[in-house]
Each structure stands twice: as C-alpha cells, then as structure tokens.
Image (cartoon, rainbow, N blue to C red):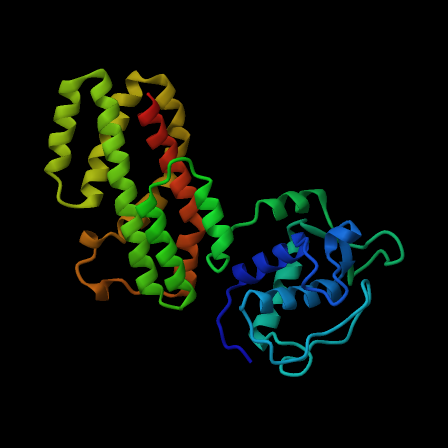
Length: 306
C-alpha cells in the first residue's frame, strides 16, 4: 500500500475533481457524474475517486480496481483487500464526503431510480459553482502551470522557479520547494518595483529618483518591498484614483500572504536550517501562490500601461 501522506484538503479536492471529471478513463464503462446530471451513490464517487487517485499517482495500484454498475450500493471498503486507499486515507474520504454535505455542496437523495436518501446524493447548484472554483493543488502540475500561464505578462524566470518548486514538492522535498518559491517571489518583487519606478518616472522624474535611492538603500527584499508599499500608500494612491481602486488587492489578509512569501527569500533566511516545513505548510503556500501572482500582476500591468 502507498504510505504517501494526503491531507484532508487534498482528499477533499480530489473528491471535487472526481465529481467534475468529464473524461472516460476512470470508470470501467467510461462513465462519469456529468453523464448522470451529477447524481449517483457514494459507491460511484469512491470508486471513481480511487481510480483518479491512481491515475494521478497519489496512491499505488496494488489492489485490483473495483467494477460496479452506476447507482449500485457496493461492498464495504477494506484497506489492503477491496481498496487501494489506506486506513488514514479512507477515513479522510469519509470525512470529506460529510464535509461536502455539511457545506451544501452535495445533498442526500437523487431523483429517478436511486432514492431520496444516502448513499444516493446529488450535487447542488452551489456545489456546481464550488466544483468550478476548486483550488488547483501542486500535484496537478499541468493544471497549476496552466493557471499561471493565464496571468498576463508573468515573468518567465518566476514561472521557471515555480515549476521547479512544483517538482520539488512532488518529490517530497518540501524545504527545497519553498526555497524555489522564495526565488520566484524575489523575481516578482524586482519586477514590481521596476514597473512602479517606471510609473513614477512618467509623472515626476524627481519623485522617481528619490524612490530609487530609497530602494537602493535597502539590502533585503522585504525592506525594498516595505519602501514600495509605504510609497504606494502614502503618495501614489492619494493622487491616482484609478490606482487607488486596486487597493482591494492589498487587504490585511493579502498583506499576511505577501509577508509569508517574503520570509522565504534568500536574504531573509539566516541559515538553511531556519527553513523547516512539512507537506501541509507547503501545500498552504502553493494554494495561495497563484492568487498572489495574479494580484501582484494587476499592479505590475497597471504600472506598465499607465
């Protein structure tokens, strides 16, 4: 059996992805939930979910994959006997299913020949929106990079470091993975500050010169970023009303997220030993990374187009 650690969040996302999956390669008869208007049984969901996990390399394929008719109740799952999920993974599968029930993403009962109660269920209208907006997790390297590629003008070096960090994460090298994220963020901050300096120069060359001098006086990436943020808030946003409208992307929560990336940069780490992480911590960083890049590039692209 695979002993790969999977968090509850990863299991939950795998369940959502199974519900939204439209290809025909995770069921013996090529079926999926879309074909049945997002209705089925727990057996259907768990069977397809297990096959998708095998396809993604998240669990080993040691036990012969189960075959079942759509809407069937199925047999009990026993790790090492009737399922490739481990005890811990299977517990999280059950937990995730009931979390989706409690959150109103799925609801008991399925119209037609299935019945009004569990194990029959259907995806709610709200659930369909949640399926579309699920987080892209780092083991979905192609989907993750596709999301990054949709960011207009994203720097190629930043993209390269993020791709390297994904490879490290999926090799369980979590410290190395976050160091690569830190390198990507260094690039983003440099691009951001350069774009802002150019923006200032279009309106006031003396203001640009003073800003550049203050930036050069800072040795750390976080120090440079602090100078940029203070100047942005105390000066530019008081003058440029269109820029002020972007302030929604600089809320308190976003600030904390930005700082978490700055702490990963090379000159913020006194010694490699000061970076100790695990799968869950790394996963949280990756989940917010795409949104972080999107928000920063809203400013970068504004400065360039001003």
